[in-house]
Length: 195
Image 1 (tube, rainbow, N blue to C red):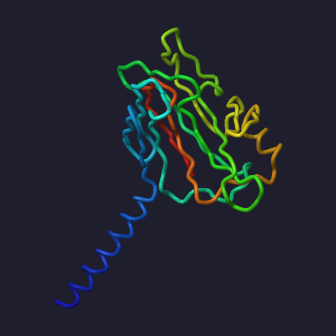
Image 2 (spheres, helix red, strand yellow):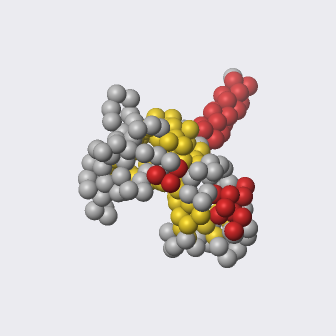
Image 3 (cartoon, helix red, strand yellow):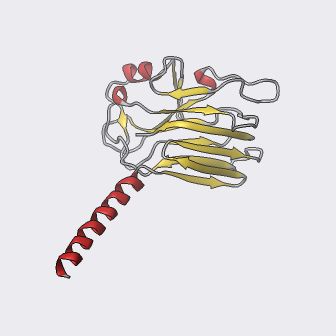
């Protein structure tokens, strides 16, 4: 009977370890006001905003996996694809949804600013009603995705941003996230990679 108990303890510890590893890659959500966020898998989610984007309405997804803190910008590979929810219109407004990445500018590891890449800067287009005309790849690897710093400044793409700032790194203690906060939004996110 003792051997059986030891075997069960080993199996149980492996299950706990496996569950903990799997949980570390899970997407998490945060919402406020009229925002809704739904996670479908470790790489897909949906963001919805039914409000007017008054500053309190938002929907975001992020991961609890180990962030790429300390990586040089040139080594960062993050992004997602957005499309209309199946059988529905995909609405986007302003600069959202967007990928937002915490940046350490002075080498102390702490967050100094956020770099953002939104659907419009990646060539996304909408019709007269604000409905996406096609799916859009929002990524640090795309040469067509512009980068904006929240504190001011813009770059043609992530490589240009990294080249102009070779010592900038991903800040520690912060997570990259995808957020919708500019008004009516209804999009599916796929191929989410925030690590």
